[in-house]
Image (tube, rainbow, N blue to C red; front, top):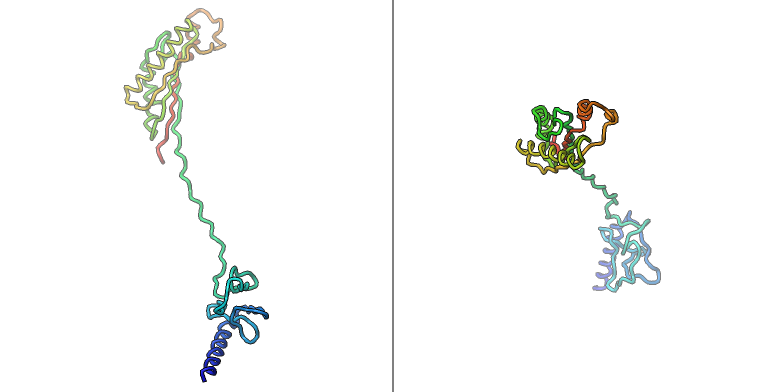
Length: 228
């Protein structure tokens, strides 16, 4: 009586398992030896979730492709989700580099410095106010101001070097007095290369007037502009 009940239970389980795997890919058991539960056709029985039923004496050495390990085509696990290719992450936008606030202003001619003079005239101060200080105010940050002084070729080389430095320092002092807090580098270039049209010019007054563009100071600003 007990044997009949056990047999009936096994048949029910087999029938249920076979029904659960209907429509799923069938995996044929090894006809000589198999550690999986199989039906009368020699097909390995699967659970309702598509897993192969192992016997109690199953070991990894008994693994069958499609039941254990990687599921390779044409065998597929019926409950496994479809393979979806990874979605590439959207590129992260890098912030744009800050716009520069760089400019250069040349203070030239006798309106800036008179002959043999390192003193700023009123015309030069107005030019600095309008073309240098106003532009500095538009910068978010000023990293450096470079002031380079020049002299004409009249006089000795030593004299012209000192005069060019004096002119550069005069502009630097004016900017500081106006509240410019940025670092300021002062450079004296000495005498500037002679203007060809002024060579061998006489009398001396005409030569001095011709060389007026050499008596100049160049203001270079390096900074960062305000964000728009």
